[in-house]
Length: 354
Image 1 (tube, rainbow, N blue to C red):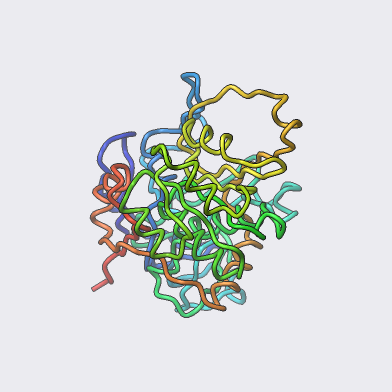
Image 2 (cartoon, helix red, strand yellow; image 1 turned 120 degrees about the horizontal axis):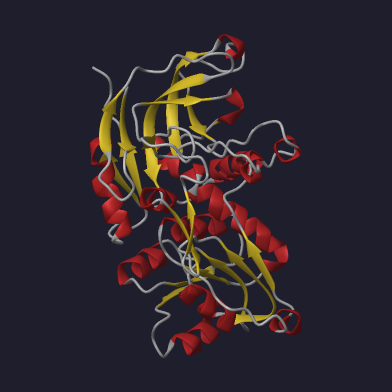
């Protein structure tokens, strides 16, 4: 088995050859057909998350061991099945992997919220992921049927699509009656636009500093795509928002995006923070009740959410821009993502076996 692994934080990925795993018990071995490249992978590559104030949540403190194979947006074909799972999954079929594995035993996991498990085992984060030609999945319950999509189009739904869908659900029907503000027009922002349209809800205004990404957002159906650094931003936003912004989804999660959102959100509104750029901000506590606003963090989504999302995709979701790269270009693709050179989502595709 060939994988491209992180052997040292912030260093180029290393091609590693190992024995292909043999599934036992409920395990299932997949041949990777496609694996998305996500901003979470960049945080892992850098060694952790910026918590602000000079603090960092280190991946090593979370139990990550190097060398480590990243990649959590995986579509794969079943090639081997553990003896306990033979009646639960079909060899030769292609599935989308729900990557947010929990321990499977705690009350959180039993409530179908494995992504919030206090002792997670996330694919590509804490166990080997899809920057490889094969991946081992611990149980068939993590394999989700996909509609008639190419593996490259389907893979980003495991994180990008699921994260956007879960964030939209947190706004509720009331929050989606009027146009919302989406901060950030990267892969998540563009996915959110597509899902919002498929849900038949009011549209969205995009805020992004990158003109190429603003153009992509307009092509994806945004009501408007505005540069938040210009003096005209507040005026243009007021003109397009039909009486103020009552719902914001922030796919950046930086001090600047916090300031923008706090200055923009109307009384009684909801602000959902998804992005993990990091940093910190002081908070005026009295403004929360005085403005009656809700601030909500949103982390990926449940397996139930992903199954719901695939149901929505079957009804028709506009495809997002996909940049396809060979598996061997994993490190170059990470670099392009870090430098903002990817519009939409980048997906790695391993070569077929000879």
